[in-house]
Amino acid sequence: MKLGVNVGYVAGPDVAERVETAVYAESLGYTSAWAAEAYGSDVPTLLSWIGARTTTLELGTAILQIPGRTPAMTAMTAATLDRLSEGRVRLGLGVSGPQVSEGWHGVKFDKPLARTREYVEIVRTILAREEPLNYAGEHFTLPLPDGPGKPLKIMLHPYRTDIPIYLAAVGPKNLELAGEIADGWLAIFFNPEQAAVSTDHLRAGREKAGKTMEGFDIVPTVPVVIGDDLEECAQMVRAYTALYVGGMGSRKQNFYNALARRMGFEDAAQKIQDLFLDKKQGEAAAAVPFELVDQTALIGPKERIAERLHAYAEAGVTTLAVSTFGSTHDERAHVLRTVADAFETTGLGE
Image (tube, rainbow, N blue to C red; front, side, top):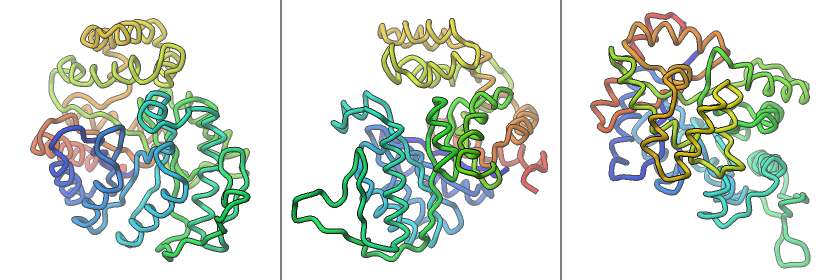
């Protein structure tokens, strides 16, 4: 198992501090930095700054939003960043959710599985650079018919023609798709004791493609809060959990809420969602059970963190992306340093 850092998405003025966090992570032996986007900072710009300040850190997009870019634009961005970083890009993709897709990008959130499959096929075709792009699918047709467009080949020669592609997946069908067509999985709210809730579907997808789990990168983003008071540590993660379980979607369609239910928190998931959608965010956060936080985050002193790291490794995690719940660079650096020290005592990286 390797350690990564997820610098998240940035809505405030601390973009430069997130870069410093990634640079510091590299000095501690972290192997990858991952950046996210919602409707604030974008991923490629942030990763380009991180890439310019580092030499070994792999640069992971977690995620590039599929509705926000054409497949060709994603391939161009990945190829450019990979060439500038000399082969350090990990291309994470995801469909986002109905609210962002339709409310922010103006793209209908329909048939996300079929759209993702076609999207990945086009990106791989472009990066392979074997022939001009021709694609006829349900969602994408390139070039457009009966017009001036012609098949084109990416002008840039990619540093790698096989940049690893990851999918962010939560639901069973999307997990199976990730196993079938991707090189890795970007996970959230990953419970190592209940890993089979998700990994069984990944394995089914791998088998469908005639592959095994060997070499498939499982990358959960894991919130980390260091401290001796477990309840106080959990309190710092509750609002984050409530946002996803309660607010990332509608009452009818919320992938994270459904995941919490599959993990055995049916009543809590319902209550959190009801409160959040009724604009009672504080009460929704308070309704998040300690057990849900404890099972999907790393909280407590260094010794407890080290013990829990074994559970992630045994569950098949190959890259654990630390999400530092700190508001300043110094606080984030403390978390990264503590996790690195705990990781070293486990011997898991040897």
